[in-house]
Image (cartoon, rainbow, N blue to C red; front, side, top):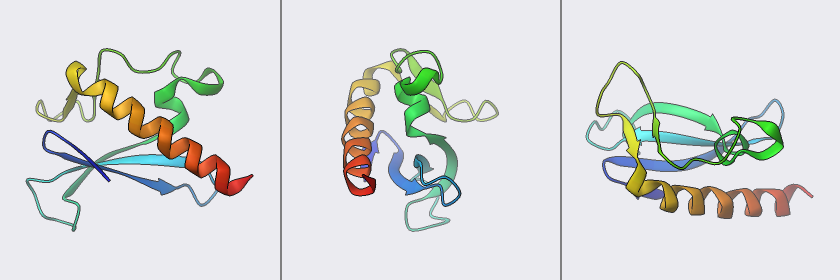
Amino acid sequence: MLTIDKFNVDFTIDKKDNELLVEFFDSRYPHTPKGQFVSRYYVKTLLGHEGFYGSRLTDGLCLHGGVPEWNIYKKDIPALNDFLEKGLARHEAMVS
């Protein structure tokens, strides 16, 4: 698990297609052991793989448009991208 600002970031697997997902939780609200669930994305989408999204993240990520503080800011994107790349590599090694 990675912590960025107020967010706990962790992986899960889409049971339908065995794709790796990343989940974001707000650690300020203890609705679960990781915090309040905020959002979930396919890792490949955020990294720009296979034509998803267009390119890897560079400027930041809005996790929920209705809550202004639920954003990953530009300064934290390199750490998030590194976490996603490493997680995807581990996942692909396990399923191949």
